[in-house]
Length: 130
Image 1 (cartoon, rainbow, N blue to C red):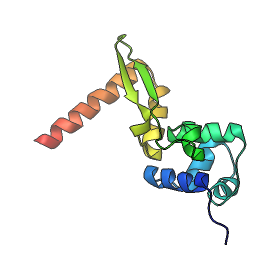
Image 2: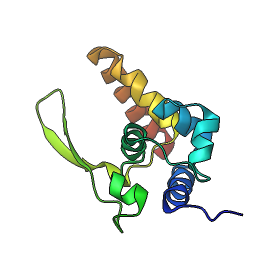
Image 3: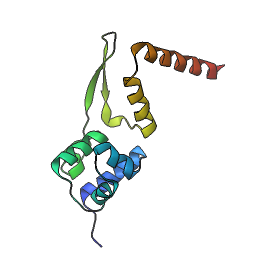
Image 4: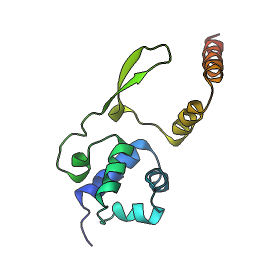
């Protein structure tokens, strides 16, 4: 039996850390499920797919391929509607598919609807304390 490549082992580790199925990763990067599963066995993807995988997992291509020991950080600056900014290291963010769907839904809502959602969340959190 062929030994798995560094890339295959890293993909398996990252996917399990994210707690998602191989099909979820495949859908996120735009390949068939069987194609992605081959990446976790031995097939080497093309460079554009490697970049998509690195972006999806929030790591560098060098980390995926074993050329770097650490995942490296990807800091992103987020700007709020009031103009304030904050920096998030997206490497440490592990979103499950429900969280990703929620974020995508929020992005498609008006600012007033998003504010209503925030108010609901605050109300819900406050009601749990009582």
